Image 1 (cartoon, helix red, strand yellow):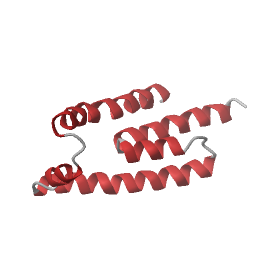
Image 2: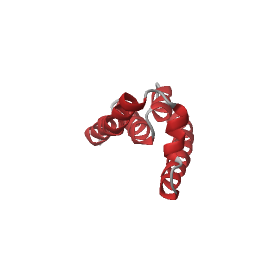
Image 3: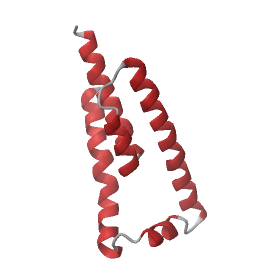
Image 4: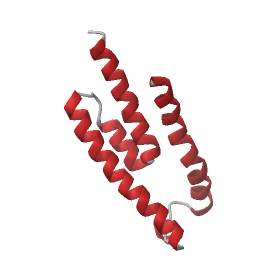
Length: 107
């Protein structure tokens, strides 16, 4: 599972930024335009609201599960979720959790 989550972590940062970096190149850090384009139609609003709710749930899960089993560096997937998205933060946490669980099993 570590390799699976590792690959998803890499894809979770590379794929979203493959779309975002060219947009930044064309428009700069224009937050007004970003928000305007994100709310351009109902399907865009649906997608952004889905991502927002997923991010809140993921951060809650990271905090709860991370504290429950004692995962170190929980702040990394939280920052990853806030800066990249759920596609990066959640697989990163699951990878850290797998590493932690392997260490605990091998004690």
